Amino acid sequence: MLVLGIESSCDETAAAVVADGERVRSSVVASQILTHEKYGGVVPELASREHLRAIEPVVDDACRQAEVTLHQVDAIAVTEGPGLIGSLLVGLVYGKALALSLNKPLVGVNHLEGHIHAVLLENKIDRAAGKSVAEARLPAVTLVVSGGHTSLFYVTCRDGSSARFDYAQLGRTRDDAAGEAFDKVAKLLALGYPGGPVIDKLSRFGDSHAVDFGHIKMRGNPLDFSFSGLKTAVLYRVRGTELAREAEERRAWRRTVDRPSIDDLRGHCSQETINLIASFQHAVVQDLVERTLAAAEEARVDTIFVSGGVACNSLLRQRFAEASRGFQVFFPSPALSTDNAAMIAAAGYYKLLAGERAGISLTAHASFPLGANIHE
Ligand code: KG4
Ligand code: ZN
Picture 1: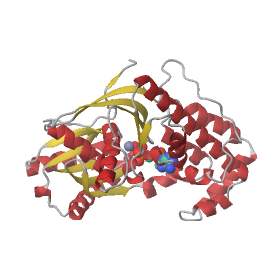
Picture 2: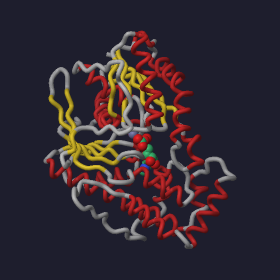
Picture 3: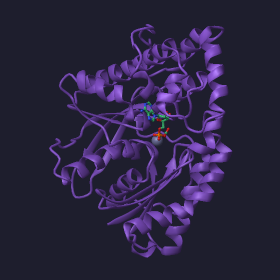
Picture 4: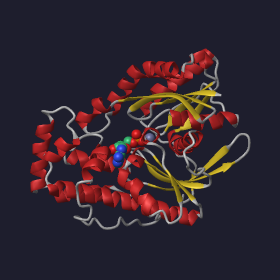
């Protein structure tokens, strides 16, 4: 079954053609980084307009690269939420119109479910390519960690010819998502957008123990997250100090250069700044790893999945490898970790197999919880 996936929940317009939920025939992602970088974050209205411009060429490109026509596609899977409503609507309406005009089945996919399926998809790709990786088996605890989300899920599968997946939310962020905290700290220090990859690369040159941010304490559910306090702690260490003056100089310099290299950027950062971001990254990663391992222990699973843009973080990958306490930890490749439509097509495939069909009333949801929250 050839599924055309469409994803437009935030600032990436993406389309992909995936065969039988496991062979990626094409995966096209049009990034809007250049549009949003001067604002240091996604501007929703601009994002919707960019999606409108990109959706048709991106879908065309996905079909061309997969060497199929739209008529040869068997079904369409589209992200229905959560995300920016204006952005979601572009992909959703486009997918709906395609399904109607081509008379193909349509299915709506939760973006978070897509991120979870990215891990399963990567595992199938790796195993088909003969890589010696273990099979990613369910049940698993999954950390979905990105610019918009930081949540823990318990994922099970009722196996059979049509695999049905069940999700329960174990915890979630009460304020900022981890990626959002990376982006805001990078904005404060004039390091560029998106902040995660820059902080990741610069932190390799810093001392991650230079600043002790302590543990993030949570009242209530210990599997919830909170990163806004950490972000504010960074702000207090910067405001009114030499680091703030240095950041303003860097901001002025950045306006004169187009996309500086990491070495260039490093040349414009004091060791104190680099130590501060390395310590910040360490605190975020430590918190993500500890809560995820605690969730896996509590849920008595052997397997952990980590997905979403922040899953690209090199320290996060390293810490999970070092501290995995016997759990098998699976990450998608960076291309499948960040927003993409192959994960939407893969998740949609199983829904289609299970007989799910969306009607003309399918609509977008800015807030769209996945699975029941076991603490509410
Ligand atoms: O999954 P994604 O593409 O979009 C959302 O659904 O949000 O994730 C984007 C987020 C951004 O906040 C970005 O800063 C972060 O993922 N990110 C990283 C890294 N690469 C991307 N954060 C930390 N380290 C990275 N290497
Ligand atoms: Zn995402």
